[in-house]
View 1 (cartoon, one colour):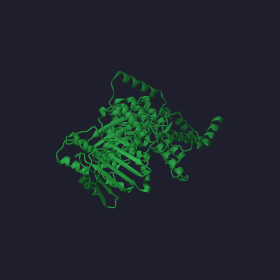
View 2 (cartoon, rainbow, N blue to C red; view 1 turned 90 degrees about the horizontal axis):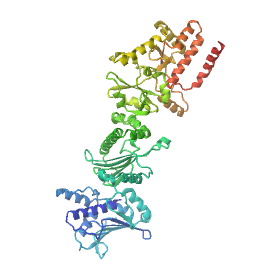
View 3 (cartoon, rainbow, N blue to C red; view 1 turned 90 degrees about the vertical axis):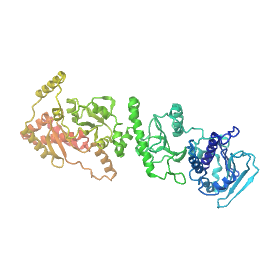
Length: 613
């Protein structure tokens, strides 16, 4: 990798001098890098047709550790106020060449300067002990450039194997500007698309690059190609794959974005380049601003890397926002496949919760089963006086629509977002508010639509008046139910029947129409299930005991009325059994009942009492 990078710099210097007119262009020697392996003699030879070196440059550049000719070249151009780009110059440290001695007993460098075609070819030799020799040679097959020959140690003979060398080239140097040939075969045939103007790249080129980079058979779902120079110089090419494997339970995906500097691989799939929730992304980030460690294996400036991560994350989120606006159906398909990662980001990336929440999509009670809406769309349909965004966690749409918590929303034709994934409760609690509207579960005791609607300005349309008259007629035709005193009596009876270990409060509610009771302000059912799983892994300890609940009862429901009548005529045992069953029913509706098998003896008693009558 280091020798190829140096050879690329030598070719870039020659090209610069040819373009500037300092050296005449020649078609005889194409600008390329050639490598030759020799297993029998255990040698690896690299030849470039670049700028070459004079005797003085061989002594200056190779005789002094950490002397960078490339850096000197760049500094000279800057001092000359040259406007020509030097972006393709890779070398920074001058120590890459000395990595040769890690695998070699002896290294020879033959150089001929392109600035003087009639100059002698000089040969520099060293065993890495700090001593070197330099002498003129009669070599005639080197018109300009350098030839480096590594005489490999016995323990490093693997580097004379062409397959081993090809693997290294493909991993680290696939995107070097100039052709790299190994024993006459060109190895780096894929172009570094991220360095090109995206207007010049076709979709088929993106697809070909993606398949090369990921070894995937499918085309990418989305492609994001951009360059920035402020606050950080970045050239990026990201892909969203068509699918992911985590949904099949195949373990967490490893990060899929490589870090390059001037088209040379610095770190393969670093874990801290993007936040973990973006691990499904594939692609390349190339930055010339990276201060690298001396081995070029790791960026040194962690603060710069953090700033890069922030810039990249914001750019990717903004890209998904644009995708959602530009093609609703394509984004819907993406969201169905990758929504779990966005939700993970909301729970783990506190800096981007607001922007990530705009990417969420939901089914809602009004929008229908096949439609997904955003928070923005939900809020756009609210009245100015509406304060809340309502949601319900349920296993399925059918369960949500039949939930007792949804009854009052159905009656008032109020939209509710339906969420079905265990993580969704955590997502909603992390977002808290959207556009100044508080996000609350309809299982909360805060829900009081009658009060909310009564405080809102009255609409004056005839349609609205007719609707109100129909609702008023429904209310007048319904059973009057228990009086306030009777309601208080039944609440006391329920408290006595269930005890303070199960119940901390029993109160009257007007939000129910078809159901006798609900529990409110309870622990999330999804959270409780997760806690139970942890409990099972903790050798079956029973630390997650259900705390006392708040029970809200519907005083107009026939079951509640008949419990009161049953109590009044002295049949308290049956009344208690029904109360216990209603409480368990409410726990089931809330997703809080741990083991429904405990209800079976009670149900048998109730059945027996019923059939005996």
